[in-house]
Length: 297
Image 1 (spheres, rainbow, N blue to C red):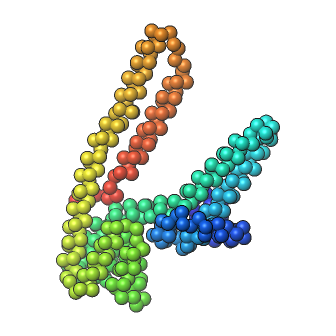
Image 2 (cartoon, rainbow, N blue to C red):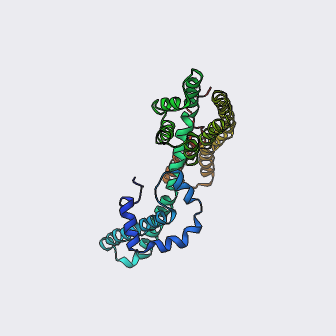
Image 3 (cartoon, rainbow, N blue to C red):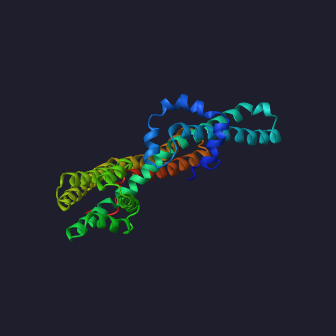
């Protein structure tokens, strides 16, 4: 597994960090990142928080030294280094700190991607399983069918359940263990409900039907909530993306004609750049709030 900004493979980076004795620093700062253990667990990254923190520290140190050297050579070629030494130090330190933060937050980013992928296909996979069970197929064979059906990460998770059950793990324990390591609340809750139904001897088909019904209703609620959020977002877009720039430019041109103040051309370029950046960020905001489901029923 490769992580952006980490200069070497994780195992090799960990060896370098041990040689530099960064594990001791990682142990001291571990308490400032209480979320890291669960993030690594859910992202399926096979390192504990101390080892991962040492990797992040080595990454930050590597980029600080590398960028300081590059910027220093550039400064020697262009101007005497005393004119740039503070800027070089500050720039290298800022970028290395950002790389440290990015590596620390990367497991959480992986978890978010896994959640979106899982919840995008979960409802359809559970309906598939319900149809299989209703038609007389056993729960295990239904899970085998889902693991081969191409539901993305949902198929992979069910394949993990099938593998554990095939190697002798009780089906209840296999479902609970896979659910425990999963970042998606809906997927985890669905597996635990199925496991509880098996443990108590309840009808699996009725349990699956209730799970599918509740999940579909929650998705409808998410759609309505998303629709209600679009109105203020559309108003925000109209204000800062259309009305304020157009009326502001018109007003400034009118005022400049009376006062004799000349508006420089670079001012309009700044406005154009601001509008472009705002619209890209606005599109990202709308996309991030969209529910993680392809089709809604």
